[in-house]
Image 1 (tube, helix red, strand yellow):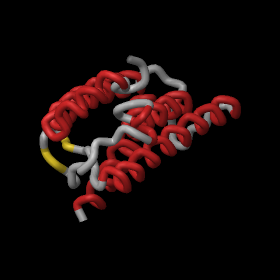
Image 2 (spheres, rainbow, N blue to C red):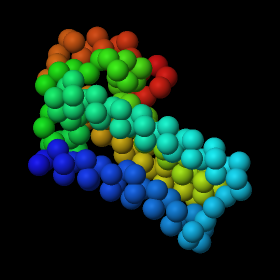
Image 3 (cartoon, one colour):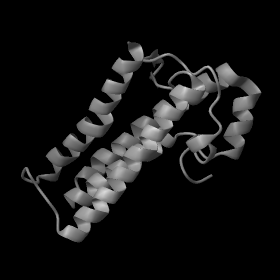
Length: 159
């Protein structure tokens, strides 16, 4: 049940809530649709981001037998039993977040407004603080194995 609640909460916050806040601060009337080339590019980003995030979640549930999400040291779903170093985790230590960031870039392209960038920047700052907290927990849970992984795979995309 906690897994289900965590996934619903993640959907409500990251897939619906933050983009809704971006739309709200953009000043765009609802519904808003950009010119076709922008709409296509935005949709590609959004779908790509969601696919990466979903792949990461499924891989973690299947291989890691849990979920990484601790909301500022409050466990929202069972912790992973195995350190994730393959699948999408081979390229980035946080593929779910990278997927959400790509999705949000699509939202920004869709909205074509500068104000949502403020929301996006705040999201990155807050989630980076969260990631640092998770990294401490992962280091405590997996020790040298995690420290070696941390040295070889970037937090997001670039080392």
